[in-house]
Length: 317
Image (cartoon, rainbow, N blue to C red):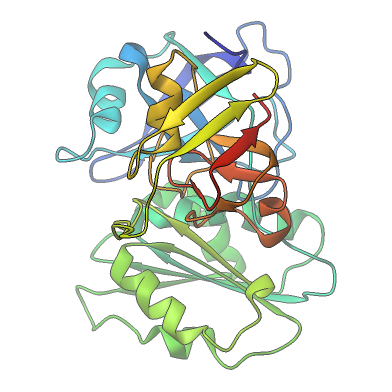
């Protein structure tokens, strides 16, 4: 069974050089209509040839919804999506994209922001920075930690000129202490981080005393999930499809759903991208993702990593 999945047809309008191993793709509607709006820091799934789905942050100002701009670093040892985009996708090609989702929480009572990015991890903060400047909230600093020339130099020029960007070149000096960049907890300051896992680990340690609502983390790849020694079989009940699906101990909900022909979009398969979010109606899910807020978990789960604490879990599928 294939359930409806909302995708938007786009074409590749331009491909630019973003630095060593990086390409910047500009996607537009084939008829040049405006694309669905997005929040600062949002991301989209690209539906690529061969059935691959990969998630990338939107780099442009949310006010500029005539296009979606994503930056892709070629990872030869990755899962194949970036290599395909670099080597097989050209101007004029068609790419289906998901509706934008996610983004940073930027409430009015937060008057200052500090963002820490490692290399290509700067991408989610480009749209945030453009939005903050445009709406008259210019009190923010973006710390970019990179070895040698920073990525996406042409997109960073406006932030350099306005004094919002601080580049830390680890080829010239040691990586700065993340705790020094973050500072002490303050009620009017919001934080964000995206980069390699070692940097995120330091960032999590530096922000352990901060309110969770003031800290936002984006990951490149999901951390490994520990094996659950208490995993047990259960049944997934699909409310709309009227199906009862057994899930074996240690099996993921995603694999169980795919195994009976339920077409669920999935990208990271590790609970960090949000593409496989499904609403649940009854039961007691065990949430193992790193993307849903406590409020969202009251109604949604990520089928790639979630489990059930009871014998039966009802999904809105």
